[in-house]
Amino acid sequence: MPFTNQTEEKQIERAVLVGLSCPSFNTDQDADERTMDELRALAETAGAEAVAMTLQRRPAPDARTFIGEGKAEEVKQLAEMNDASLILFDNELSPSQMSNLEELTGRTVLDRSALILDIFAQRARTGEGKLQVELAQYQYILPRLAGMGKAMSRLGGGIGTRGPGESKLESDRRHIRSRIDKLRRDLEQVRQVRSVQRRQRKKAELPLVAIVGYTNAGKSTLLNTLTGAGIEANDRLFDTLDPTTRKKRISDTQEILLSDTVGFIRKLPHHLVSAFKATLEELAYADLLLHVVDVSDENWQIHAQTVDKVVAQLGAQDIPRVMVYNKADKCDPDVIPFIRPDEGVKISAKSGEGIDDLLTAIEKALGKGKHKVKLCIPYSDGAVLDMLHREAQIDSTDYAAEGTIVEAVVDDKTYGRVSTYIMED
Ligand SMILES: Nc1nc2c(ncn2[C@@H]2O[C@H](COP(=O)(O)OP(=O)(O)OP(=O)(O)O)[C@@H](O)[C@H]2O)c(=O)[nH]1
Ligand SMILES: [Mg+2]
Image 1 (cartoon, rainbow, N blue to C red):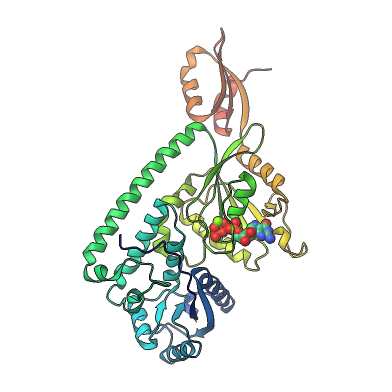
Image 2: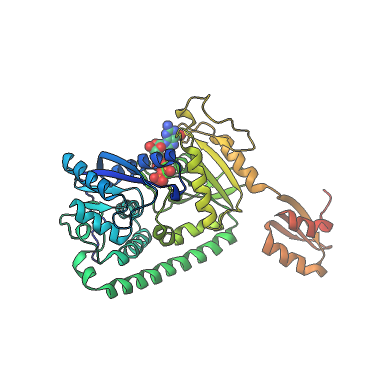
C-alpha cells in the first residue's frame, strides 16, 4: 500500500493561517475569528506551529486565488518573514485555487479539509478506521490530482503528505478509482458485520447509549470514568477515531452498552462524514444519546448546535437525548448556565462530580414509558405470547393451569395491548 499514514511525524512545521470572511458564507465576524482559533488548534494537533495569522474580509472569494491577489502576495511575505513552509486556509479551496496559491507563494497550501484529513490519518488505529481515512483521502485527492504539485511531491513527509504516494497516483487515475471501489466494498462488509452485531445486541436486550459531542468535550474521559475503559484522554482534537464500546451496570435492573464516538467539528469535510458512515451510522441505532458539552469553552453553545446538526444528518435526531454539561469543575459556578434538572446534568467527568445524577438520568430516560408487568395469557392466545417475545423484555415464563404466566418489561404501546392480561398481585 502506498500509504505512510502511521509514521509519527515529530518535526514541527511553521505555518501561516489564512481565513476569508464573506457575507455569502453566512457567518458573522465573531464566528470567523472563532474558527480561526480552532484552525490554530487543528494545526497544533497536526504538528504545526501557527507563526502568523490573517483574516481577509471580501464581498466574495476570488475565483483564481480565493483571497484577493494582493492579499495572497501579503501572505507570501508573511511566510517569508516568519520562515513558514506551510500555508493553512480555514476554508475549503478548489483544486485550481490550491495550485494557483502554491505557485504564487512557493509554499505548500492546505485547506481545512486536508488538515482534518491529515489528523485523521495520524490517528486511525484499527483496520476499519484506516480504511475510512484512506477512502476519504482518495476522494479528496482525485479531483485535485492535476494541480497536486507541492503538497504531494514534497519529500520526507510532513503535514498533508500522509496521502497516497505520488508517482503512481499522478500517472494513473484509474488506479485510484479502482482503489476507491475496493475500499467501498471493504467498508460495506464492515457495515454488514455491524448489522449482524446489532441484531445480536438487540437479542441480548441491552440498550445502546452513544456518547456524542464536539471534539475535546470530554467524551472519552466520561467513558473512562463510567466504565474504567482506560482510553487515553488528552487535549488533541479528534483523539478518538475508533469508537470503544463497554458494558455498564447502571442500576440493579439495568445494564447498558456505552459507546464513545468520533468528535464533531464545524466544517467537517463531507468526505469524512461519508467515509465514517459505517462508524457513525451506529448512532442512528442507539437507544439514547449522551450529548457531552464542554461548558468551560466560551463557544459551547455553537459547538452544541454543530453536534445537533451532524446528529440530524445521520438520521438520529429523534433519539432521546440527555444533555451532559461537562467540565463543571473548570468554570466559575456563576458562569455555568443555569440548568434545570429536566434539561440535563452538570458533571465533571474528571473529578466524578455529578456522575450519580447522570446514571439516574440515563436510567430514567431509558425507562421512559416502560412498565414491569405480570401477565397470565390463556393458551388460546398464543399470538400474544409471540408478540411479547418480539416486542418486550421477558424476565420469566411459567406454565399454570389457566395459561402462561409471564413477567416482562413492556413499552407504552405494548402495555395497551396486554393490559387485559395483567394479574392482580
Ligand atoms: N477540567 C476538566 N477537564 C476535563 C474534564 N473532562 C475531560 N477533560 C479534559 O479534556 C480533554 C479532552 O478530553 P477527552 O475525553 O479526550 O475528549 P473527547 O471528547 O474524547 O475528545 P476527542 O476524542 O478528541 O473528540 C482532556 O485533556 C481531558 O483530561 C472535566 O470534567 N474537567
Ligand atoms: Mg475521545
